[in-house]
Length: 119
Image 1 (cartoon, rainbow, N blue to C red):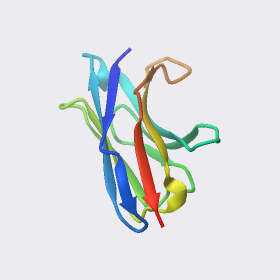
Image 2: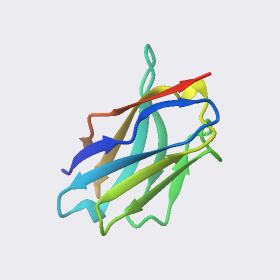
Image 3: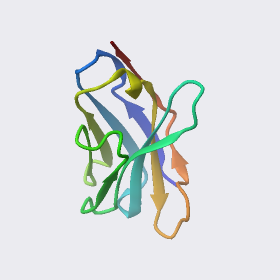
Image 4: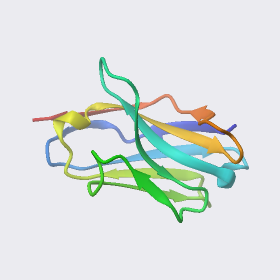
């Protein structure tokens, strides 16, 4: 497993932008597919975006497509989520997660960072 720590959350007005960062520790980070998930109050945790181990492949939830961009820097053990044109319904705790090669599920999770979008 890798240890993950998110940062960059905060309060922003609708239409604004935030960049979330996820710092990973562990020598095997480059072997992990990485994802961002979010959980709003009273709702189930939902998928936001993923990036494969090399960064060559990404996928997004329909609700964020065209507004959010996931990226990674394997040399720095970092994953990012650039969030533009934020909306109030993007308000949630955002989690970074890692899925090791061969693992059927995400097996490493961060503690989360709060994003609040005001209208």
